[in-house]
Structures are given as C-alpha cells and as structure tokens.
Amino acid sequence: MNATNDDTPLAGRWFAMAALLVAGFMNLIDVTIVNVAIPSLQDAFGATDSQIEWVVAIYILTFALLLLPMGRLGDRVGRRRMFIAGVCVFTFGSALCGLAPSIYTLVAARVVQGIGGAMMTPQTLAIVPSLFAPKERGLAFALFGLSAGLASVTGPVLGGFLIGADIQGLDWRPIFLVNVPVGIIAVIGALKFVPNLPGNKGLEVDFVGIGLAAITTLLVMFPLIEGRQVGWPLWIFAMMASALPMLWVFVWWQRRRATMGQAQLLPVALFRNRNFMVGTGIVMLLFAGIPGFFLVLAILLQVGNGFTPLQSGLTTIPFSIGVLTASIAAGRLGNRFLRPRISMGGALLASCMILLPFVTPQEAGEISRNAFMIPLFMGGLGLGTAISPLFNTVLGQVKDADTGSASGALQSFQQLGGALGIAVMGQLFFAHVTSGLQAGEGKVAVYSDALQLALLFSTVSFVALALLVWRLPAPGASKLDKPQAA
Image (cartoon, rainbow, N blue to C red; front, side):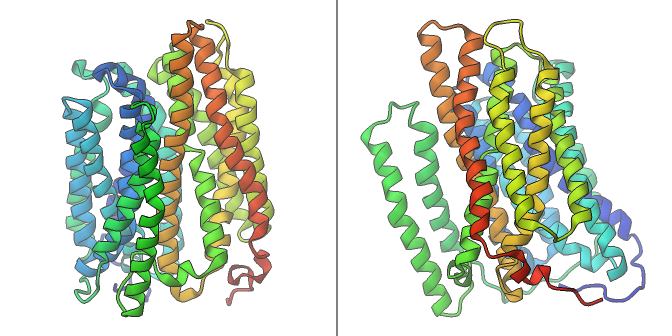
C-alpha cells in the first residue's frame, strides 16, 4: 500500500476520513444497538432463546472468522475497492435485517452484515497512511478511538429511542434500516475522496484455512447454543468432541502451508510464540465476559422488570462513560505500568459482576436505574483500564515483522471470545429462567437469579484475567517499553 511520507496535504483527506469514520461508526454502533432490541425481536418473532442468541452470536462469529482473510484480500484487490464493497455488503445486510419476515431470515441477514463488517473494518486503519502526512496521522488515529467511544455511548440510547418511537409502526426495524442512508453516504464519500489504492494481485488467501477454522468454531458454538433447546442428545456432545481433531487438522494445514512457503490464515510463527498464545487466551477471557453480559442484562431489565428499550439503554450508559474515562487516562499513561493496569482492570470488572446481583430486585417494583450506576461505571472503568495495555502487552511479545498478522489475529480471537461468552452465559441464563418459571417462581426473582448465575462465568473470566496477566513477561523486556527514538 502506498503511503504519504511527505508534508504535502492531500486534497479532500478530511472528507475521506469522514467517510471512513462514518462506516466504522455504523459497524460499531450496530454491535451495541442490537442488545437493546433483543427482547423486542423475541416478542415480534416468538423466537426461542437459542434463536435470539444466534442473532447476536452469528454476527460476531462471521466477523471474527473473516477479519484476517478480508484484510489480506484488501491487500490483494485494493483497499479502497474492498472498503467500498464492504460498506455496500454491510448496508445491504442491514436492509435485509430491517425487512426480515422471520427470525431465520434475520439470522441469515446478520451473516451478511458480518461479512460486510469484516470486509470494511481492516481497510479503515490501513487507508489512513495514504491520506495523511506523518505529522497528521496521530490525530487521524485518535479520531478512530473517539468514534469507538461515541458508538458505545450512543448505541444503547439510539436503539432505545428508535424502538420506543415506533416510527411508522416499524417497531425494532429502524435500528437496522438507519444504516441504509448512512452506508450510502459513506460509499459516496469514499468514491469521491478516498484515493484509488492498487492491490498486489500476487498475494494468496488461505481459503481452506478459513473453512477449517469456521467448521472448528461451529462445532463448539452450535452445541453450546442449541444443546439445551434440543435436550442435550448424544450427538451434541459428539459435535463438541469432534472440534479437537478438527482443530488439529487446522493446525496441520497451517504448518503445511508454512513449509510450502504459502500464506496462512494464522501464521505458524504465532503458534510457536508461547507468550503470544498465552496473551491471546487472556484477550479471549476479557472479551468473553462482555457481549454476553449486555445480552442477559438487557433481557433482565426489559423482560424481567418491564423496562422500555430506552430505559434499558439509558441504564447502561454509566458503563460507556467509565470506558471513555479510563481510555482518556490510558492515553496519558502510555506504556507505563501495563501489567498492573490490566490486573486492576480485571479486578474492577469482576467487582462489577459481584456487585450487580445486590442491586437487582427479587420482587416487582423494587428496581432502580440509579442503583446500577456505580457497579456499571466500575465495570466500564475496568474495561477501559485493561483493553489498551493488554493489546500493547500481547503485541509486545511478537517480532516487528509479525505485528500486522498478530494484530489481526488478536482482533479475531477477541471476537471469538465474545461469541463463546454469549453461548455460555446465554446457556446459564436461559436454562435457569426456563426451570424457574416452570417451577412457578416469581418472574422478577427468577430473572435476577438467572443473571447472578450467568455472571459467575464473567466473574471467573475477569478474575482469571487479573491473575494470568502476570504469567506474561515483564513489560520492561518488551520492545514497547524500550525508549523510542525521537
């Protein structure tokens, strides 16, 4: 990819940057906005618990599996072309979601959205060097962080507002349809202002590796999400067991391609880097506890306690504010105290999970949004405190030549961790809700107890994160902590 290495300003670069930010914001906000709509979706379609889990998990899974190969494909066909194609696919998928006549159509449309998100996301950061001179790139990259923060705050509130407004009697559908005009604006802006960046047609893409990774992941995810729904028959456990030999086949295939000098989906050099693999596991622990948490919390608030979607979205705002607050502090601390900050972040997140059951009611009429403020703010502080130093620490364990591949792999495993967390926490939550309601227990108490049970998973994940990070080498030995040349 061509980069701008002189100080000559590129005409229209900020308009091009706006197109990249709009597309990225659309993708990020879609992740948070859906959680608020889950109870409305379940109501509208009469969907089962597992079908509702698929609405959230299938997007994350598709995005995670295709993130690395789509980044590689962007290098091959050209980043602008890939970015525009990704926005078009994402926008088309959003329209399909908004018009979906059934839960099955919605899940399929979420796959299309995930493909589009994976196509456009790796290109956004990669296009920046071709737009800006080195002295301007810091500000450009900072805008991506600001956009992500705004998306996390805006998503739940916007989702709640759109559903509550019931525009033209469309109920939940506008949360997806709103992406259509936004996507069109992003495409027009990219066509007009983003420079054409030629690709390298000689680059290879490991399509077999993509297939093997997808099969391996689904052999784990499908049983976890559908097992309770079908009564845990023997074939469900056989599926989970078969994931291990399929994982071996995937690793063998990657090593074979490395021996032949061919491109790999996950570079073998990263497999052999013990510290990177441990760090990747820690990243998965962090993100396993987040999406599932917001899924079950939205259901507790709306289905268990009668909150409107807007009230539910407003209740979660302290978490987003905590993330933004900690992210600002993280920027000032730079690469200092990395492991202590990660450990503290894990402890804060675990504290949030431990405190929440104390503020959830056991009887109707007791719930208060204000009671959630402190635990959720602590959780947001924890996530914002841990995420930046964790990525820095893990990427600090790889050679400079492997940093690009490691960064993409880390983002993929981050998403896979989120999908796994949704499956496990959903299983714990919905199983308890079903058994409790069948036993004739009070609705509010059943949902509160189900939340407490589901939070055990995220609590254990965050405590493990806080402890396991000390297994990584001291950051002082990392290249990230060595003095940088002026």
